[in-house]
Image 1 (cartoon, one colour):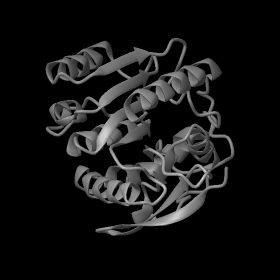
Image 2 (cartoon, rainbow, N blue to C red):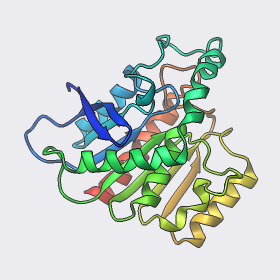
Image 3 (tube, helix red, strand yellow):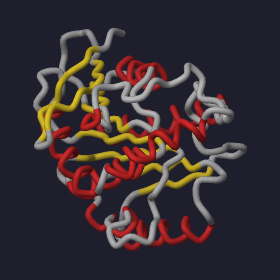
Length: 247
């Protein structure tokens, strides 16, 4: 299924995005997909196409658009453990510059753009995130309870931090149904307990699973962390969530 590059107007300039829509001419439920730290690349585009094949209109913004169009960095075709630390080192200044204020400004713009596309049906959307994108998805849902019906985060990072605005402290604003698919090394037992207590206290409908035999990044076939069994579980959980919340 062909994708296209679109430009999203934001308060800080034009954000480039990869978008893919079912090609039947109908309107479909929208999905905002936040990438992992490595950003838009063939691996992410393939996931967006897979979702579109199941009947969803998918928008994947370039999180680092303030630093240039995607790909902001030249990435190897396979991000192995031998090169991963160096790549993360180059990305870290961009990640650190992506403050909560910027995240929320961008989320406003992304949701407005997605929900007003002619390919997207009326009603709430889903927000999906991998790695750092999981925290962005949670922040987006908390800030836009009326517009987000489902949140999914896979091998998510930075959900529980010491910051006053840590995502786990904001869950009272979430009305969406949430699924979090953790790897075995994503979160300590104490942090997971704190997150679960916060979700329960806020009456958020949620499932949180630790996918067995996994490490952070398990869903990405262009990394050494890839686990095909966990990838299938990810699709099973994600598609069931979207079907139950977006129909």
